[in-house]
Image 1: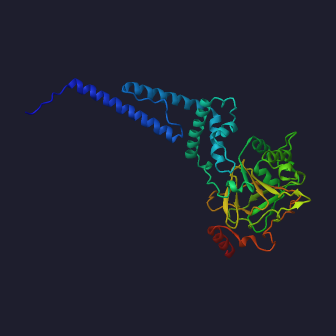
Image 2: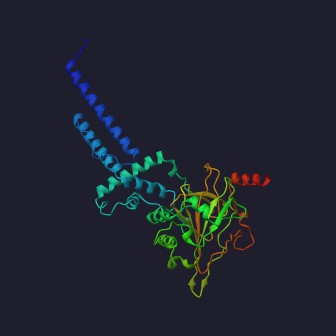
Image 3: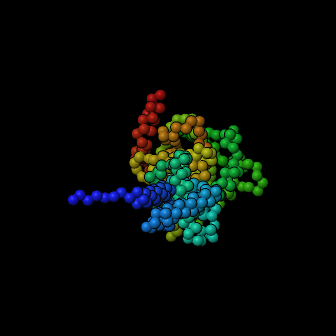
Length: 381
């Protein structure tokens, strides 16, 4: 005998409502999990799904509202945006900052981060802001130069923008004034011009009580370039200003800024190799080609406010790569010689040979094919 089932409209409506509530709850949870995942936040530990769908829905909505309020507070604080910028830019250096260090660099105090829950919330805000910054501001996305790795930290150091650098930048004359005021001369076999600075007052505004030379020395010492640690002789420090005079991609000759020497001991005392410091002073930053050893070089973009320190044995060349399509840019920058007793500053020279003073650097160090082809084409013209 065939068994018949009776349809109960009341039961069916209740079942339908429960199923709709469950679907709604799961949708809210999935949406919240997805949002937090793309924003780099922790998974929502407060979400609870019980047997009652209404309770679960209320829990999710409450948690989401709390999260929204937290995000609103974060975005209202300009220090979060600054911390995100510090965090993203530091990834293109080999002096990286984590989320907490970025918060401190942006002006948050240690007291504000003393509460673990508040510190976690602020870190999540910075992570979210950094994600948005990467999407919205392509200018901060600089492909990290492979040369900038932990193994080269003893020879190549790129440090990011800080308050001391900001104060220095505020003292500079406008680029247009410097172009008119400088005693510029051509740099041989390149598209560069240079100005050997004799008086730092020529670089800065007429601000009473301000000495740019002293400010630079303080900046360099802060980053570890001291007489005690690296033997720097600041009484012999020299500075030149450089700019790119045309739109050619022709770089400098591959060179070092000091005569290559091997460190020796002098009467039991350690000798120090010299360094150079490179600082762009206009918004477009500057470019430099770097080599960590024989082979093909890499271009590094130095953003305004960053400082690149190179030990005297780092092979390099000034010049922008073909990937830089900007026009009418002069890439105004400063070039400091930080000499030591062992390696005095040269007299406006670059050095094109290896340690044997015979083998040419260009025999072992080269530009990518695209640059070499451009140079050959230029010679034929």
